[in-house]
Length: 233
Image (cartoon, rainbow, N blue to C red; front, side, top):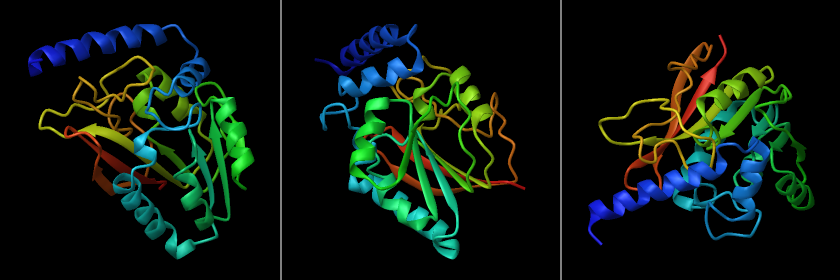
C-alpha cells in the first residue's frame, strides 16, 4: 500500500481509537490500555510499552538519573507519578532514601506491590493530591493526557525541589509544543508534530532553573524522548 494511503489509514484509525476514550474517566482510560495491551505485546495487564523496556531508551535515562543523584545518593526522597510496571523505577529506586510509586491503575499497583519492595499508592493525579518529595518523576505520562488533564496534574503535585519530566517530542523542524489531544493511548506527537513542554504556554510551570539531562531517539524515526530537570528557585 502506498505511503500516503497508509498515513490516511493511520489517521482515521487513530481518530476511531481516540473516540473510544473521549468520555472515559482517566482511571478507566489507563485500565483499558493495560488490559488490552495497547502499548505493546508484553505481559498482559502489566506492560508500560517499549519506552519503559528498550535498553537503548532506558539505559541513557538511568545513567542520567545516576549522575543527578550521585552527589546526594541515598539522601533524597522520590515520588514516581505514573510509575506503570516499574521496570524503570526499580532500577533507580536504590539511589534514593525513599521511593514511592503511584499509578492510577489499581491492578498495576497491586502487581508492583507483589514484586517490589518500594511503597506503591493508587493515585489519580488529575483528581488527587500527590505526596510531596524532594524529587518528583513524571516519565512518559503527560504525553498521553489532554491539556486540561495535564493542568490538573500540575496543580495536584505535592511540594518538590526537583521535578524530572520525560516526554516524547516530534523531532522534525516544525515542532510545536503542547498541541492538545484526547487523553488516551497515543503520544502527543502522533500526527501532531508536538510534545509536552511544561515551561511553555499554556502550562507556564513555575521553576527556578531548567536543563535537559537526557535526550535519546525513540523507537520511531520521528520522535525523541527528552528529559527535563526543573529545579526550584
